[in-house]
Length: 430
Image 1 (tube, rainbow, N blue to C red):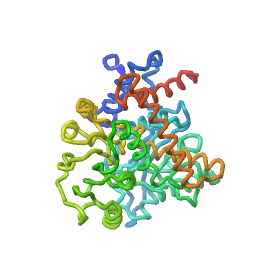
Image 2: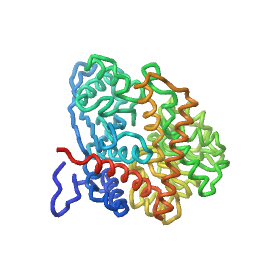
Image 3: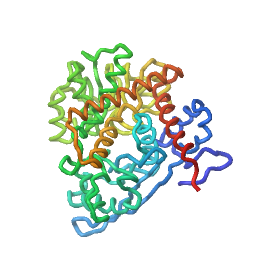
Image 4: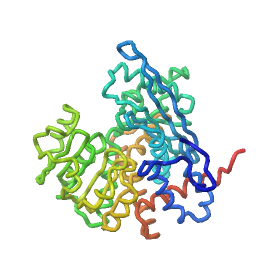
């Protein structure tokens, strides 16, 4: 439960559960504070979400019964601009998780240099059990409930786990109906015909590839022939696998909620994508050998891409992996203890706050295009994405080299300096 900080534990905002996403985030903040100098005075700002909204989402089911679902929208920090962050539908969504995800969005947006604060939302639901009409009613009611704090200049939701362009279309339409005018900029990740941006669907996975390519160059890891293992084969993982394959790498292992596969010769990414689209997961794909879920982590590979949920790279798994490079396609996939083990083993980790920032970067492009009603080509989108992420990665790499810290700590230093400088310059009101 939420509580005020106590003298005994003055830096706590909630009682975080061990290895929870919020606990992981707080541990990351602890590591960055010593590098913030005078700005550390404002450090408590990083530990406290600005606003957390819990909403009841009642809907009428197709059979006439009424069911209630719990929804959240958390705005962690708005010092640098309106809140920005996705909405996930998942049966394990909790307030603590959404708080952490919103905080990572604050860091991510600042690390890349986008003019946004951090926010995140979610509903505790198993969406696969809902009909299309039930899913629409759930989305519209949730949007109406959080409508008091979202808006094109207040907080801009986007797709996340188990949400997509259709969900965003319903959210945009509901918000627009409630204000009496079309507001395309209230969400990003919409269908192109409703103001969405070209290149948005593959943007997060492309960002994983772009930052991975830059990191591989710096550790002299050729992509030609590199062995890649991907956990999570949804939008992010499959796109990253596709782009690495196009660069000459081979996908030697994949895991999702349905099973795990390996192939020393390399899995056919296009065929696997088609199989997942048809069957809902990698299980049953004939082009690879089925393996136990735990065995995925010990498959010989050069690049590991955790692109599922948070907390997947544990200390035990950090000891198992043979990868030289870990690219965090998911948010918060590596526990702090695992981070230390990977560092001791000389494994380079490109942290989530820069590695998977491609999605929010193209969301920024979409937001700008909606305001101007002028839209760019996909080639322009991809070129701008490469330039922004490449520049952000270089700055973070140089910061890590200068301070002799990990890329994660360097990314947090860069981001938290920007956030706290904005906080200090804006001052306190009243």
